[in-house]
Length: 163
Image (tube, rainbow, N blue to C red; front, side):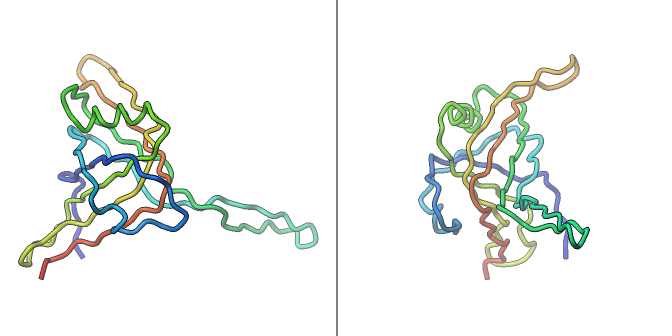
């Protein structure tokens, strides 16, 4: 098993995408036009968490914990502000709409061997909940903070050697 750096990962935004009752599959993202969001500094986290449901049984004097609905949460993305970047422009425009958008995260974990190695990917739909600017102190880069409210399962595509 190998470890891989986050450095080199890429995040893309696609077009508006409707929610569906069934989980998404990779084929649901076929034909999507992807625009890279550039100047990434932080990709945050992504993945399902179950809501906690508690039941306090009087006769057992014991709390029982159950799992409720699942949520992939909010992915907090941080970029250096680049007013000319098509991906940042698309994310800012998406924040102004009520729609979910397709997102694609390409990791930096392609195998070192094989005829046509490809990295793993994560695909999902999300609403761009915010696109706020942070200016901080004198010796810092101005940032664009993008919050993605994930509204689907996360489709995982494994890295492959291409053989």
